[in-house]
Image (cartoon, rainbow, N blue to C red):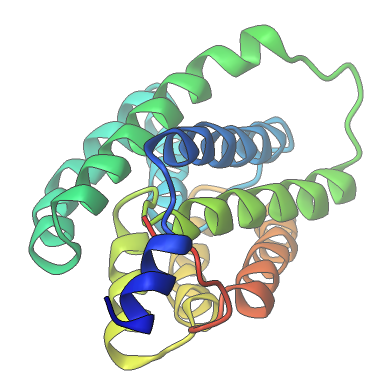
Length: 207
């Protein structure tokens, strides 16, 4: 057995570790989304698109998020493989569920909007980082971002920031400008966490 194969086995995640990471990472993101939602903010990616549609139509956020991601699973399968796709489907489904039940489990009598923006952003960034390191995502644009990092070496945080900026501009049609500005603060926190911590070659664990 080669040294590379030995190291590959040594740092491979077990199925239990992958399950734990999907639950933990998705919970972090859901908590951050709950803070954003309470403060009337939004974020980028398919989460941001679901926020936009939720604010525009009043339809449940969780159901919108789940449906928006359906077309992206084929790309995930073609570009990232079946295991990644199955883990992503699990994370997206859990996220859609948590987005609907967390407001019943967790209520804020008072919430500072700056705290919501920064803490919510860091929670979402940390949750996405956990998912990425176990070869999972929250679907949609995350799949494209991960593909570009793996194939071209483009940092996930920077690519995500550009796409998220487009979503923020679209939000001005539905969300008050000051809330869009706060959303930008939250998105900076998300992408800073990814750009600093999610670099090619930095993490050796594999799923």
